[in-house]
Image (cartoon, rainbow, N blue to C red; front, side):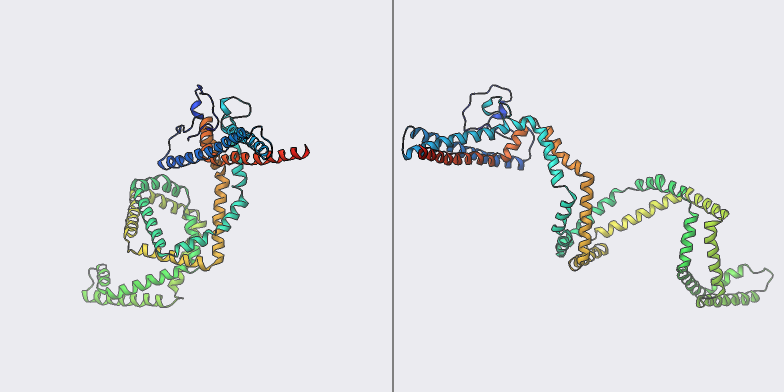
Length: 446
């Protein structure tokens, strides 16, 4: 950034190597973007204008002082005011200049404070930000006053915004799915899932799942579906049933007898399956329930059953087809998802848009939901600040430490130097008024 020595006070040429730091319009020492350069140019011009104004007031006070020197009466008041204005202007110029450099290039003690103590100032600023802006109570109060959930709801209520969220989310998810390659899935299965499946006993898990399913009668729905399908298949495929039974008839049995027997067996099968389907307390159903309960018990308690189940599990995991099946399933799922996400009028996008609209309506109508979401947002921000706040504020110190003293002074002066010139302007004006007041007191007491 550019800084300059006070153009309002003449000084001799400075042969020191660091003189460029005290010259006006010095070039910035670090790279800057076009926007930064344009903003710095504006700040530099404003700083020069304010310096010129402060210098102009000092010169005007000096001219008035010389012009009224030795006069009495009203001009004596003017002379005293001009003299005090010069003193105030020079004192405040010294105070402002001493922050950034040695006034007139003289190594006066306790001057050039920022170049000499930039690291301490950086650490102090870091502590100040952390202690006064990153406290949990302040963050929660700010998050509550902002009303994140309400703002999100109002924003999503606009159809174009909801459509944009769906489009951007679809694009991001599509890109993420495409970046997951088959070898990644293969590596995940081989290196993570299969070893984990081998280590984890599957028998207790299957036993518990089966026991819970039976406790909630979940298996009855599957049994009903299987019986219904089997009954319909037996009715629609009598030839297949008679052919299968005929193949197992004795060779010496007459064909007519075989046909009558197989037809009768088919009829009884249809009736028997129909009876089981229609009677919830059929003995076959009870026998199946007892078999499943015993299997659930053996999977959890019987060592032999558990051992056989684990051997079966390991044999399945040893099959190369298992890995190929995982990869094929993932590939099919990925292609289906990508295709749905890329279709602007597809069901996935349409459903996502509907759900977003409903969510926005709920946010607008449900105060309790908004409060919960605001609390969650505050919790997330507090967690992030507690965990990473120190790293965030340390950016201040690390950035300032990378600057050398001159660069730090240049950057800070370019941003706050214009406002600091008001100190010089006020010092000139207030000093003149105080000078007039003191001269008036002197006249009255004299």
